[in-house]
Amino acid sequence: MCVVEPNSRFLKKLGAITLLYVEDEDAIRTQISEFLGRHVGSLIDVSSAEEAMVQYKKHAPDVLLLDVNLPVKNGLTLAEEIRREDRDVRIIVSTAYTDKAFLLQAVELELTRYLVKPVTGSDLLEALEKAVNEIERIEGQEHHTDLGFGYSYERDRKQLRYAKVLVTLRRKEMELLEYFIAHRDQTLSYETLQYEIWRDTPMSRDAIRAQIRNIRKKTYRDIIINVPAIGYIMSQKGSK
Image (cartoon, rainbow, N blue to C red; front, top):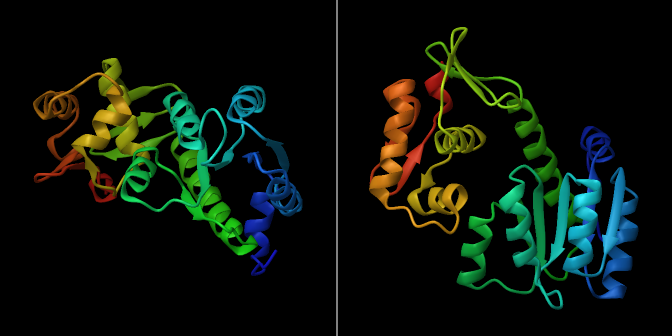
C-alpha cells in the first residue's frame, strides 16, 4: 500500500492500541489487515457486524475500523449500537458513500474519520493518528478536569466538586456535563445533545435549556455558554 512514513512518536503510541477491523470482502480485509498488523499493538479482524460485536465485548478495543457496506447489518448501524454504550472508543469507517444523509449520520456518531474507498496506507495512518490524539485527550480528562472558579470534575468517580465539597448532580446533568467536558471548545447543537444524551426520547429545546440552567445553578453561569440559535459550548477559557 502507498504510505507516507509517520513519525516515531506516533508509531510508539499506535503500537499500544487494540484495533477491531470489520470488512466482509476477503481480499480487502487481508490486504488492510497485513498493513495494520505491522503498526498496531493488537489487531482483531472479522467479516461481519455480528462477529464484530462479539469481539468488541471480548476485547474492548481502543479503535474500530468499520466498512459501511456489511451484509445483514451495516457498519453505521453497528457503530450506532456501540456508541450507545461507549462514547470513548474511536470509530473510523470506510465507505463508497459521500451523500448528505451519510455525512449527517457520521457527525451524529462522532466518527473520528470516514475514508472513501479505495483506502491507502497514508489514509489509514492519518486517521489512526487522529484517533490516537483523541484517545490521549479523553484519557487526560478521565481523572480530573478543572472547570474554573474552584470547580472540578473527576470522571472516574463521577464527582463534581467545589473546592473539596461534593456537588450533587442528577444523572442527566452528569451525562450532559461529561459530554461538554469531552467536547470542550466545540459548539454542540441542540440536535447533537438530544441524540447523545436522550437518544430515542424526544426532548424539546426548552427541556434541554432547563438541564443547562440546573448545571449553571450548581456551578456558575458561564460554565456553559449559549451559541444563539445553535446550542452551547464549554470553552477552555472558562477554566482560566
